Image 1 (spheres, rainbow, N blue to C red):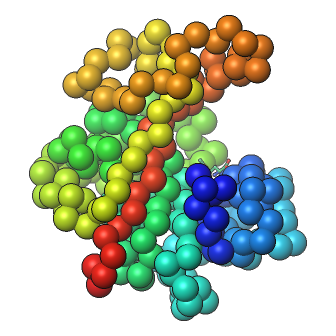
Image 2 (image 1 turned 120 degrees about the vertical axis):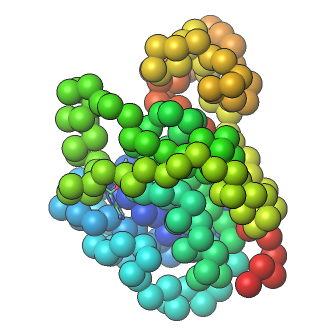
Length: 225
Ligand SMILES: C[S@@+](CC[C@H](N)C(=O)[O-])C[C@H]1O[C@@H](n2cnc3c(N)ncnc32)[C@H](O)[C@@H]1O
């Protein structure tokens, strides 16, 4: 995505160990990168070139980016994606990537996909293993606020977005990551790029397929503000 878009600025919210920051920097060595996490101590990769913030995206003065048209925002912070989109739009940004774009009934945060499905959000009951895994990436004390099923959020998205594109999985295993059958009602998903993994270079995607979360790119209409 970044290679195609070639933005001058990238804002990344949700750093954790810094793998994303590393990838952004390697992909776009000329870009100015702003990386945000509410706990920077988890970073293992720290770049001297990246501008780091230990502050929520909504609390940062983004007048530091004069040319908002030339920026891409990448959210992987497990917060409410619709709120993030609204915050970004109000600041004048137009291009967004959302990871953890979970379908209805799944995942720990409200996603654009759930909004399009009129699904609302309720953090599902989690197994002990999942709670331990999420403890590493959640804000301290984070419980995502429940959102009632509604169609207003989808209507809002239709009214502000020029483009909403879910990237297809590279490969789909027989069952979803939750061990369920792929039904179009619960898991509307673009066709995978590969249906078999016969080449060695494709083998890692068998594991990766269990991490796919409908990552999406969206562009806000021009002259909305
Ligand atoms: C899934 S991890 C990010 C993974 C990362 N993008 C990578 O490349 O591996 C989620 C991160 O979001 C952070 N986080 C939680 N709440 C946040 C917030 N309000 N703003 C920014 N980051 C937040 C967590 O501390 C955690 O490090």
